[in-house]
Length: 112
Length: 116
Image 1 (cartoon, one colour):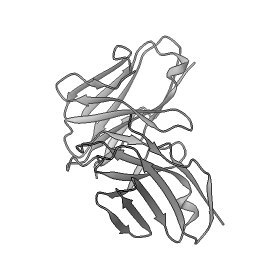
Image 2: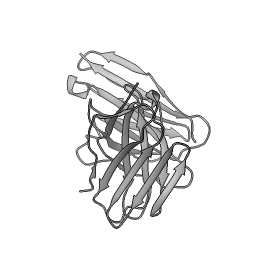
Image 3: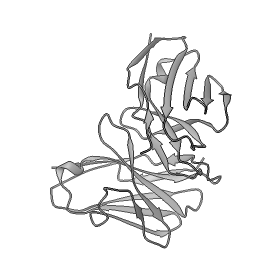
Image 4: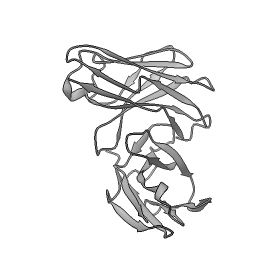
């Protein structure tokens, strides 16, 4: 059974700091990796996708992928209170495609 | 990304009644849509894949006769929760895949169902 593991948190960081969110996955054949942000009571919003080993940067967000270790992370620089949300890691299966397995999410709290 | 609209945003119904949730892809045609369910403090669980013009594909453990899915057009999929019970109370979210078939999903606003 495919699994995606995340620390549920909450992860608390002060405003302006770097928040580091981690995720491990079990399906070694997975090809696509995503980070979604979900505010309380709302649906998920895609913030980052990464498909190859290494880092991918988009504004204040950096996704990091290490397929050998089956590990994907999300760094948020200059954290803002508006970044407070639950961050869901999602992974597709071997062979690619659109069926994703989601982790349970890490709750991030950015404190003033 | 795709713009996906869901309706209703929230619904309260009595036990034993049926509830229909609509999911519309507003800016491009979607031959496939996904229906997820999320219980409080839990992750999204895929319920079924809605296929335009054919039967939906249900995930293991999801009752196809209870959760009826119809994908009659390239822009609309509906999920009907039949004979709803309190344990069906959940957040139901539809999603549309991006054009590149890489797993990128765009979600509707979600529909919160409360069964009394």
